Length: 220
Image (tube, rainbow, N blue to C red):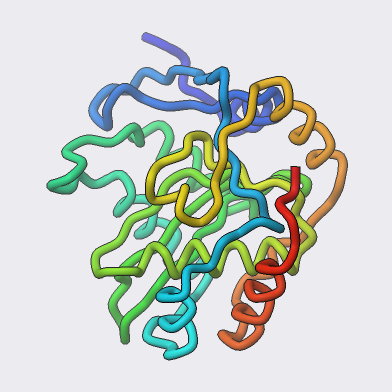
């Protein structure tokens, strides 16, 4: 029987540039992933689509942070028709809940009334944020959560938003792949600086922070 992964081991792995995944949510084994090309979302190069800007202006969703972390990660781990299985097993869920309790793991949540309809979670270390997974139960909920995360990270002084891989969903916001060596350089620099996860932002402030990124160049 393998020894359970500890939160300290997980954090050391991230600091070295690798991240854990399970083959599926029923397999309790953990594998360390070290891709040749790493996905990042440059915070200064975030692209806010016009349609999403309109949604943010209308205030259709209420955005909150860290009020339903356990629900968010369980929704991320749950099977969906377009994704019947996930890489988040019970071990990863357990460790992330532990890290949330000590203020390292955070969630960004999109609410409609009293219903949690979308969100994401990730880990904060230094001025790096490691985005882990997201979910959406209604159209645009995860997009709004991602935009809110970018605003929070920009305000808090973060230098790196690690997305692990680049999907079509992330590419529309400006996510790119960079070689492992370049990623490790960015990671080292980000871990040496301190940033603050600001938590909830007023909708107007979040939109202003996102709008200011449209005229700047992508960070490396």
